[in-house]
Amino acid sequence: MRARLENLIDEMLDGRILLSEAVSEFEKVYIKKAFLRNQGHLSKTARALGIHRNTLSKRVTAYQRAERPLARTARGGAR
Image 1 (cartoon, rainbow, N blue to C red):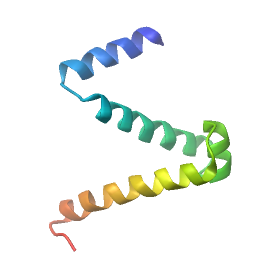
Image 2: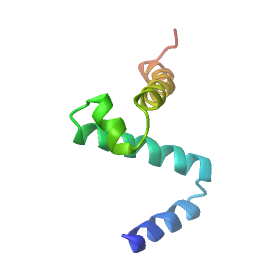
Image 3: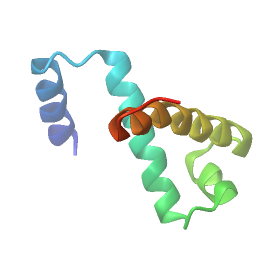
Image 4: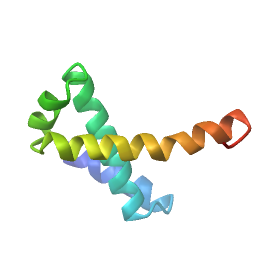
């Protein structure tokens, strides 16, 4: 797994991905996968991730807010 991770990091560095972008994207995908494994159950997912359910809830809400403007833009107009 370490070799795959190092290859991915090389690709990201070659693509000029900033560390903050990489960390943010990793966290979103990690949380999304954990939700799927726990059938969308907030408390079980938080427990699996080792964080408080309120922390998880706040992060999920922040991700959803960040994605909404993109969805509006894609539809052709902002509200």
